Length: 121
Image 1: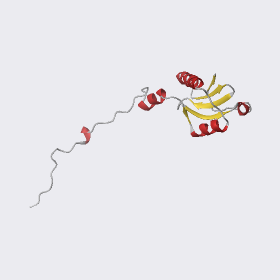
Image 2 (image 1 turned 30 degrees about the horizontal axis):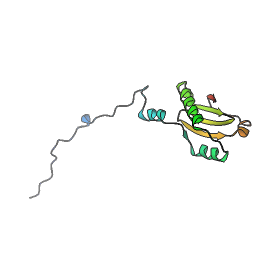
Image 3 (image 1 turned 180 degrees about the horizontal axis):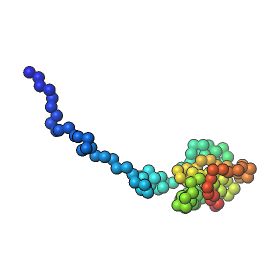
């Protein structure tokens, strides 16, 4: 004679499930904290443009850029134009990402849109 298998532990009712707490407004997520701690990321497009246009920064310049981007973020800037020795970069401050880069000849002829801050180094 075969008997049906019975659970040893009683089934959990719907009320007993642990509900995931929704993040409260004003709290910072782990991803946000991690993004703030990491350095500036260069997008694939920006890396291509920097190689193509021979735009290079020393370690000291790159550290200065990262520090100023952090300062801009603290002031509420979301997208910034960063100008360093005639080269220009458009940086998503919100995402800590360099979007594109231009050399001096190109930067002189461009109109930059969708930025809400400028960093001059």
